[in-house]
Every structure is written in structure tokens, then in C-alpha cells.
Length: 49
Image (cartoon, rainbow, N blue to C red; front, side, top):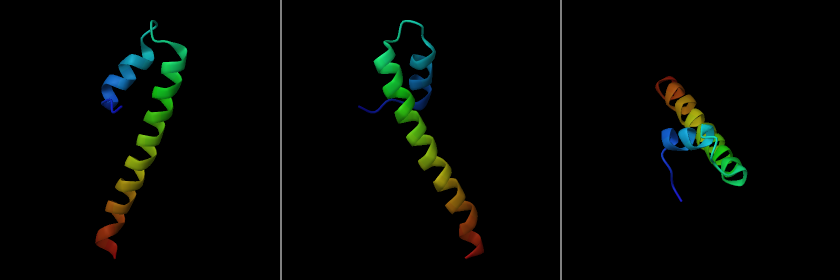
């Protein structure tokens, strides 16, 4: 299931979110951030190639 990053964050900080769901959201958001950062690094290096 895809969740917008903003929505995932809001669900993570909601005190009523189930701990298992929170853990899944954190893992998904962390993976997204890794990929997003990698994409930005590659874009920053692109003009240099």
C-alpha cells in the first residue's frame, strides 16, 4: 500500500497508531528517504559527467 510521505509522518506521530503499523510506516519512510537521497545525489553529479 502506498502512502504519501506527509500522511505517513502524520500517522507515525499519532498516538493512536498501532505500534506494528507505526513500525511498518517508519521502515517504508526510511526506505523512501534513502532512494530519494540517492536520486538527488545522482542528479547533482549528472552535469559533471
